Image (cartoon, rainbow, N blue to C red; front, side, top):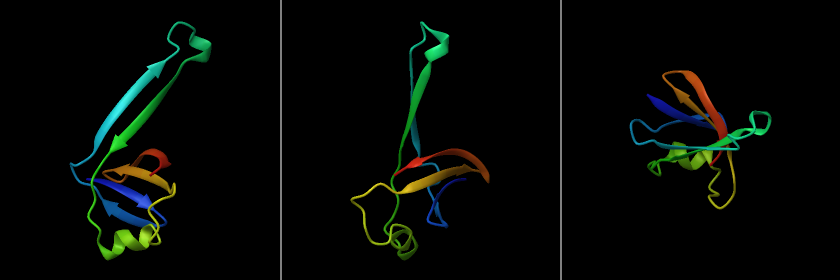
Length: 76
């Protein structure tokens, strides 16, 4: 199961997570890099609202866990 950890609150995402990956700079291995973005929908439950502290127009640090294993970190 995929979950987001936001402000010490685990939010289940389930199978509703879509991941996009991009790579740039393949010509020069010393400067290669990439980007990852994920799209998901979550319900506005009381737990979710408390994780965002009721504010949705700012960046919030989050971690993505897949079956209990940290998979990615970033902002939502």
